[in-house]
Image (cartoon, rainbow, N blue to C red; front, top):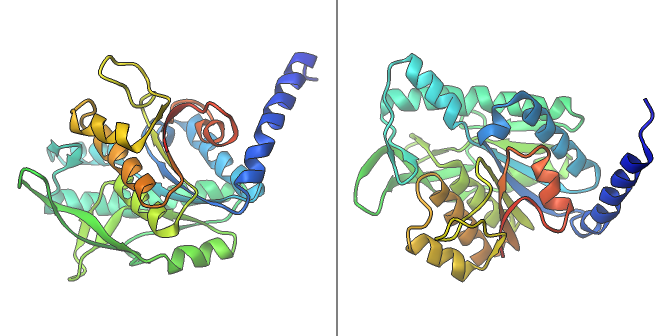
Length: 287
């Protein structure tokens, strides 16, 4: 069926608005943390993969780091293992880590890279089995609580990532790191995405989540915040739980050379493209 004139005008307007951004970000590295509803709902998953393919087609260089919290929780429930969270991080004992390795390290990593490849751009999963790109150490939180096999990034080896990008292949990275003894550690995907963005000196860091963005103390969505404002929000306890590592990653990245960081509502279809190719976007910009 032929499109209406109004539909054609809308399409033309979107393409016209997007052109300057396509020109600006041509050849630039954009790091994306993929998770939440965008990784769970069928239509959103397909839309995300197509967005990555489109980014590649117009000359951008996407790098994907994925989460997997809901999928891990489902498998833990099947195994009758109870999870506990501290400051948005899953306390990880050995039985939990085995499930994290299977679900986050292998299954999801392969599923996402296959999905992107089927959408028209080659992708390769990088995980603890085929890559040692995430060097890590055990994380002890600010209260001195031992989180178990939870890690923090000490170094990102970017050589393999850059090699894939030079060959036109999209890296899809699982956030499991290895310590000096090659022990596997579960690392928050937002934190890994932030470190990858910094190591690659990326143009943008985009964190997909299941909320509309960062809010102020009155609950109003903030479309744009400065690093100083973001730091104040963190110190005042306005954000809690899983939003804390997102804002921390965004703040640290912009302080350390990434030009902008975006916390984006991944429940919006094609949120990735809306954030990159339109003026207003669909989340909170830290810059």
